[in-house]
Image (cartoon, rainbow, N blue to C red; front, side, top):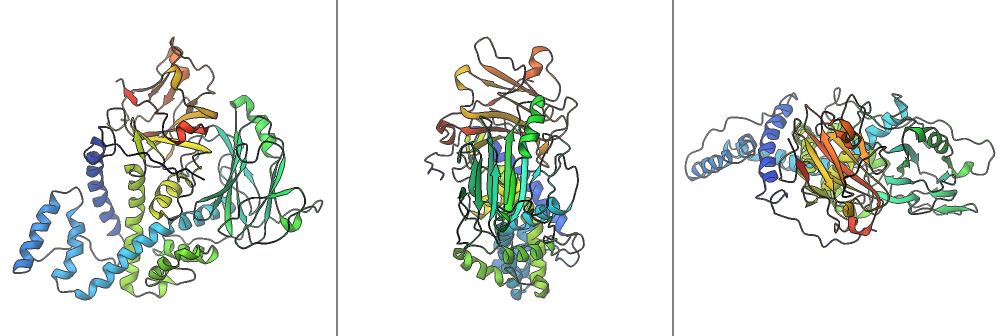
Length: 534
């Protein structure tokens, strides 16, 4: 389990402290985002305008509210938000408390339920929609999909994919146990992350946790009690009926791809009832819940959430929260279409505001401990559980799932060492001293992504990561390593250490460290800041 952290956040320049450059810049960004959200919401028919004119009432109340509005104009948040909050009271529409209560509850429900909504769509797409099957998951329930090529810029599902491993993925139905097996993996790094429907990890199978020898592992669902066949080891129990098995197998360059393709074909899944029966294969089942399209049904996210909460009941201690959500029609088996119009409007508004809220929470970095501009994840990463905001934004939206820090630590940076945002036209360097290269027991790599969609950056060289296995990597005379971060090649011997960045769009970096050593998990190892050179 993750260890309790004693780390403190820094308010030094370049950190995310309240007086820092990034904090001030983020405030300006939030002001723009509020305007953007208001515009988006007003596109929905039947929604009350969020920029309604405020007719000033007489007396002391009018003076107080006008003073508040003047103060709000000095803030980065749009004045329209405050106008929307006070308009019903100023107009004597006291009964509109119901709309405001429904909206505030719905926003919390959206944050709580986002992983369920997101995974409903991902599961349907990955099970029923064939696309580029070399890089994009497509497999029946209880069957593995294996990537045959490393991720590149043709993968546009977001989630910050890596360019170091072949992915394996499977949506499994744990109404009965499913047995996972793999061959002897030798010294090769591999892992299977076992993730519940709310995006939390509940166990691992792999080099770090269960070893590299061939093995068979039973994945069980809520409440299952039974006897397993000899030689089958039980993993921790999934809290939800549906789970995602997400595998990563290290590829040591393009020449290693054929061997890894052959290896992953030896991974397998089978329901317990078929175990030990020669020739028995699970049927190619693709009958999963089909989320309604928001283009046809503006309440689609809520319909999906209710269906997924019924299919994957939350833990008992969430009951008090679910009782509040039920007042606005959100909960297992409830019908949002049966709600009065005032609640439907609040649900529509919350869904539109909820998405940019989650996105900005991740981009803002409040979830992290900042060291030299790098955001170190919380020790609970991967199992954020009852921290619903971080679970939704930093675990589900940002990456579909997140590794436990003991398995892999991902450091994220949007800023250079001076606290300035990484520029599409800028040239930068990341300089490691010889004695301070990332300390890992598996491998490390650095990858760049575009900020707007969390995807790999298209570039003519088709280079998407640089790390300890990059061919031709050149160290400095002192034994240190410099990585060049810029849109165009630095030329000559430097090109082997070049990571292309975007020339047009805001971008950021992720430094991945697989099987990191303790000093990484505790943030005692400090990654050097990114230096702007031109």
